[in-house]
Length: 344
Image 1 (tube, rainbow, N blue to C red):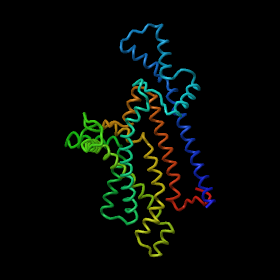
Image 2 (cartoon, one colour):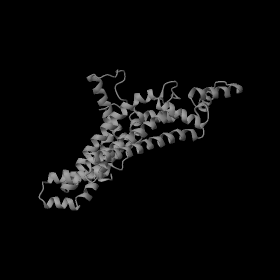
Image 3 (spheres, helix red, strand yellow):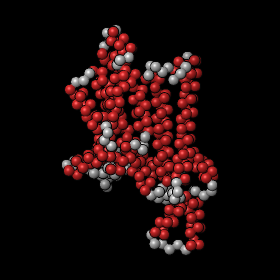
Image 4 (cartoon, rainbow, N blue to C red):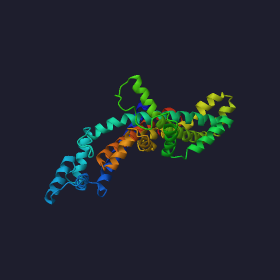
C-alpha cells in the first residue's frame, strides 16, 4: 500500500507541475501578444476614436490624456512592470477593467457569459461524444448492417461541413422558413432569468438550434474516430484469445475492445470541453448566443485586448485542468497504464 501511495504522489506531482507550467506559459504568451501588436494600444485607440468622432483635442492635451488613459487602464510603466503587476492582480482574482466597457471589470463580463457557453458546450459535447463513441464501437465490432452503413455515410457527409455552414443552414430552415425556433438570443426578450418553468422552456427553445448544429457534427466526428480505433483493436491477440475462450460478445466488446479504445476518446473529450475557441465561437455568433464566443468577437472588434486576454486565460486554464483530469483518470480506464507499474 505504501508503494502504491508513493508512486501515486509522484505520478500526481508530475502532472500538477506540467499543468502549472502550461498555465504559466499560456498566461505569459497571452500577456505578450496583444502588447506586441502594432497599433493595439487602447489609449491610442481611445484618442483616435475621439478625434474621428469630431471632438477637438488641443495638441498639448493629447499627451496628458494618453498618459492618463494608460494609468487608468493600468498600462503605465515598462513591459516588465506591467507583467509583474498583471500576475499580482491575477493571483488576487482581478483581471482588470474592460477597455470598451470601462470601468466594468473583465471578470464581471466573463461571469455573465461563461454559464451560457459552459451549458451549451458541455451538454453538446457529452451528448455527441456518448452517442458517437457508443455507435462507433458497436458499428466496428458488430459488422456492417444496413443502418450502420446509412449512419456511416451520414457521418462522412457531415464531418467535413464547418460548424458555421451547418448552423446557417439550420437557422435558415428552422428559424426563417419554418419559423419553429427563434433566430437568436438565449431566452425571450423581456424575461427575467430565473428557475421558473417558463424561463427554462424559453432557454431550451432558444438553445435548441445551436445545440443541434454542434451535436450533429460532433456525433459524426466521434463515430468515425471510434470506428477507426475499434477497427484496429478487434484484430489484437487478446481480443482473439477472448473469442477463443467463448466469452460473451457483450463482455468482449465492453471489457476488451471499448476499454482499450476509450483513452483516446476521453483525451479528445477533455480537450473539446476545454476548448472555448472551437466551432462554438462561430456558432454563438451565428445564433447571437450570449456566450464567451460572442463576447470574444465583440472584444476583438473593439480592440478590447484586456477582455480578450481574460477569455483566452479561461480557455488556457480549462484545457490545462481538463488534461490534468484525464491524466489522473486514464490509469483507471486503460488497463495498460498502472500506477504501480513505474510508468504511466
